[in-house]
Image 1: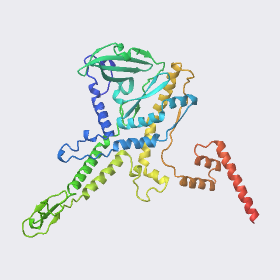
Image 2 (image 1 turned 135 degrees about the horizontal axis):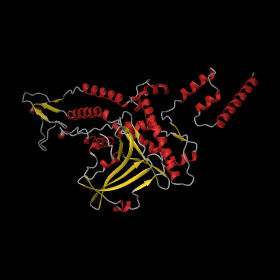
Image 3 (image 1 turned 90 degrees about the horizontal axis):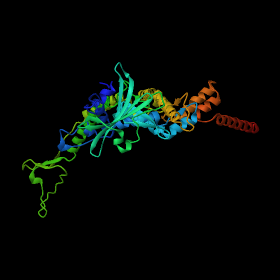
Length: 456
């Protein structure tokens, strides 16, 4: 279900959070636990066998989040606009590199990243926990947002409160309610809480659009996106369960028992101890026929278990759109060049490109709105941002030998100029730097040619 009416949302006597949002919020809590490696609270591997409790956490959830964040924004993109000083100030003040990294993690973990723009001496961009975000949409179109509600509960002086910011286009409304037994009891003045005494009941933002601009993962039928954890949870649970059981088996038979006749044991009369080293196992007598002691061992036959682990890993790579190459787990010869590595990473790079598509336009809106709120708030030197561009940079390692070979072939076959070739090989170099390098090459070749003539 989705929220379609603000008045019903905050109706006296209603529970908070709304029942229609409980499934989403529960998923957020589950996914945060998985991200933190608290898998025992989700998968319950040990519930049926507390006597041999053993935890093995393969935290794929966190590793996949950081992998895609590294590939997409590990080398932060360049933001450009007509008024570059304004762009540099906004992105620098808001540490966009860190904000983007966390936004990617939120999209994968929750299905949404929720930036909120506000003015506090300058434009500030906050990344809101989606558990505090309640979008109210049109009854006729689940993707058309009518208001973004940011709401949370807290306790002060023994009383439970619910505070809410209702963001509409061009305005923000602030409300405060008393809560009793998880339900909205009554509305109270904002000044009831000392730190809210200067917060207005409503205010115009001076911006014609929302100050909350969500970034939504793919596959959603509404503004609320789908997370990337749910599809792989079953595989990760099976992988961990298989590893735990295999480890338990190996532990159990690491100290074998000894079998033999009691007559084979020599007892030290002083200490009363036998001269047979049993280790962690025990001695099993078999009678008095003089049988020599031997270790009772068990062939665990774990090949099937290891095969199952391989199958699960293979499916996990498919479902997560990764490969062993993402984690430097390569067999010899599989990726001897940069192009070979990219071929191995095709599904992963395709997902990175999807994330770019998801994020690019909303990010431009965030930056544009941040500039607009500074202009509306009459910040000295504030200007609007026009013609915003985001230049995403690859975080894959550069194979310089391969690039040089390619450029050499292009130059030799007269498919490019030396100037263009040098510019591609020296990313970030200015035109003056390229011209100087070309002049140095020509001068060096002239000297070498002169020396060859003298020798002849």
